[in-house]
Amino acid sequence: MGINERAYWTHEAAEQIGVGESTLRKWAIELEKNGYSFLKGEQEARAFLDKDILVLIRLKELVRGERKSVKEASTIVAEEARTTPVHEIVKVEERGQAPPVPVERVEPLFTLDDVRMMIREELDKRESERVKERDESLMTVVRELQEVKKMIAASNEQKSFWSRLFKR
Image 1 (tube, rainbow, N blue to C red):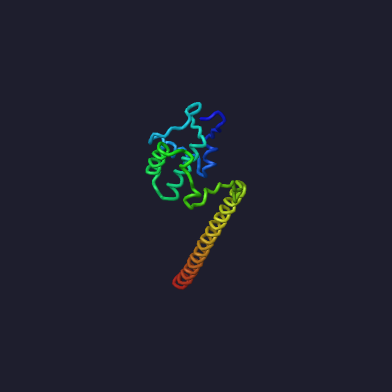
Image 2 (cartoon, helix red, strand yellow; image 1 turned 90 degrees about the vertical axis):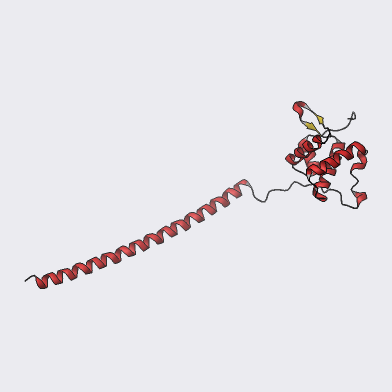
């Protein structure tokens, strides 16, 4: 590491490379399995130098662009890092490919309050549907009970007619 060379922590390096922090950690572990070493800070936290960023960009090219597995790509990149000068590892423009596009921070489509409101609306809608179904079922039962009462009343009237007729 040169005297003025800047070191990047995981979140900074991940942002520069355009991948998530967990992806960067997995890639770094695979590279270390293949003999590549990173500068380590307190509590063994990795610090990424400019040369490491270039190596990781190359790994990203192989994984995302050429569809190689992380294991296979890390083997290739670790070997390239041992045998090729760092400034030649990533020459994207010379290969006719566009340079990696930096990921912009995008505002979320919905805030937490928006999501809560949408969930509440959906729950209210479902609740009203359940209440409507319950009310319809209750009305059906009430109608059936009324029919049964009418039938019982009619049966009682017939009994009383016949009982009066034969009661003499």
